[in-house]
Length: 169
Image 1 (cartoon, one colour):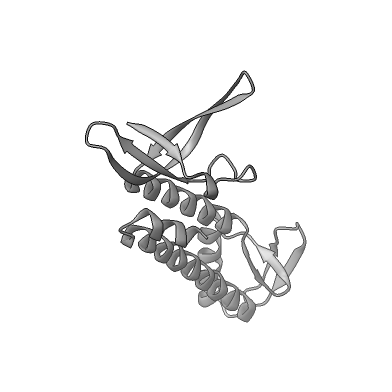
Image 2: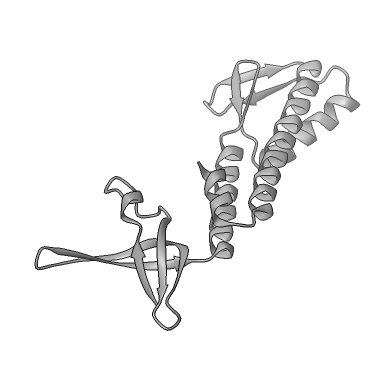
């Protein structure tokens, strides 16, 4: 097989991770197919640039996109959530602590607590604030999880590379 870039769609400003439309030429049956590939290696020899391209199939691209979505989700979780004018942790350990303090606040009506925000400031919370805090944390998690799931489902539902590229645009 011979891979030839569709030159009018290629520019020097594209990043290495960009999927480039290519024409795949099969010398045996003289057929042309549009495929997508990424630049792997560029060699400069006698003032001529040779680039080797790695063809990508739809399942590989889907896998890479889902990995990217998951990484972005994890970063989003680490960024925390905002309430009372502060940003608070929302990772799994923080959620366990929030659940515990919420349970205590429900059992003891006079319960209050000082909580450390992401910027290390101390936020004093009354019983009602603790309940609102816990509710906000759970709503934030639900939104982030459902958004992440919807993005992954959209990738999985794509049947062509062109559809996948539209999602990432």
